[in-house]
Image (cartoon, rainbow, N blue to C red; front, side, top):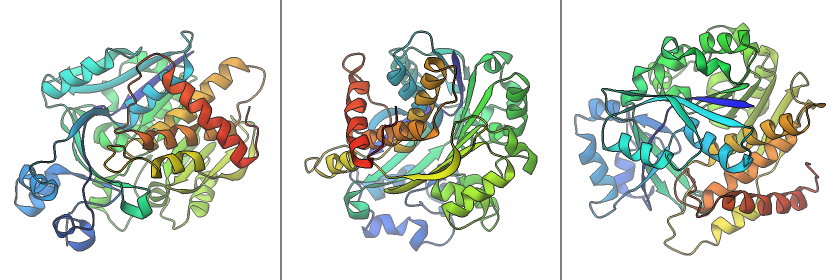
Length: 398
């Protein structure tokens, strides 16, 4: 089996703790500042922040975080983080993973290349361009939202803005599963998503999409739904869509995740999962790909939440990458079910459960990628969380 992922890979600069209740943070937040501002729980582009304020972004960042707060670097991006979690979960050489994207020939690009050198991933589709490597400054307040934590993201697109759908080689479409991860951070690819989905469908691939906050379209038309595909009929080419509550609401133009589920179902998306922070997720399957033909809900992991809240004061753990790891957990479970049970359809509930524990575990360390000291370390921890999750829900997902 072959899984190919497409989207943004970048360097995350993790600043923690940042006090979202402080006057300096509020000065630059959209909630208390007119025009472009940092969005608590959302993403803005650094270039737009500079244009709207007339101030260098580096100076804004120093003002918010303080000169003494040194960031921790990590590999980030909705596509690459999900793929790395898949690799850490499958432990199977018969499932290969490839990543397609762009990076620059600079310090951040070399950092990403070094880190990915320790992961069994095919990078032949990862090209170098003459533009800076994308990066995101992640501001994290672990005490926010009753100690559940929250983050704000400032992104520089850089090399990610250089890829369009026409730049993607035919080798991408030779995968069994194609993952389009957070393409809103790669604007030209995002605009070509329908083109890519169509090519994937014509090649007989499964099309999986996980979304990210689409600041570009939110800024262009704040009162209109975000465009995901070119026409309503193109939704039918999506076999699995994963979004959080806000993203699903902005794409559908509807207020509740239940209404958003109904919207995507009516448009022909074959299966959908909508997460909602610490609240229950909701999922839908039409029975085409997954065995379920229903709408259902699942809670978050109580065990992971308790462990997060019991972390010692001053811990550097944060919720960065929880959504990306959730998606990776869903994809890994789906791939393993397809490979190990070829005579039956995979279970969306089982896949979502592995997403829950993957996303929950990501809140117990800093950054999106968990660097293992030995192979299988992360999977062992996830299995423990999964067993506790089965006890919590009373379900047997296997």
